[in-house]
Length: 179
Ligand SMILES: [Zn+2]
Image (tube, rainbow, N blue to C red):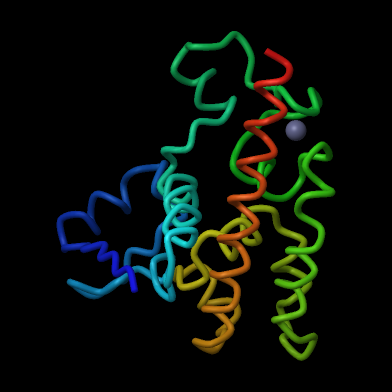
């Protein structure tokens, strides 16, 4: 059993609310609480997957928009599909090149939220809200819209952890081939 603790104290919470790179991270966590992204980690593979997800969640996973923002590239256009800027939502939801690698996970996540939820269409039609769901379903911007049960959030966390890791592997492989 591997236990990983992410401690979020009040100062960090205030900092997170003012940093755009932390916009997807829930800031309403208890001191010493284990962030949901790090719960249900039972083996080394889960640790590896969670590490990638945490990087995406905290804005430290470098995408093309980051390279452009920090003047390390002349373009923010996705190097895989070469159609749109590569930001977090593009990577997780819309990049057509990665579509075959995410479809099964998206279907599984959408199946966890029944149609009885009034705001379900709004959630899945908004790339920002959908990205939020994939990265941190406990974020206040989501819970105000759609109050999911704890076991549903845990299921979404586990599916998205696997999906993000697989997207990361596929992206890294394609980029190493093209370079
Ligand atoms: Zn793309």
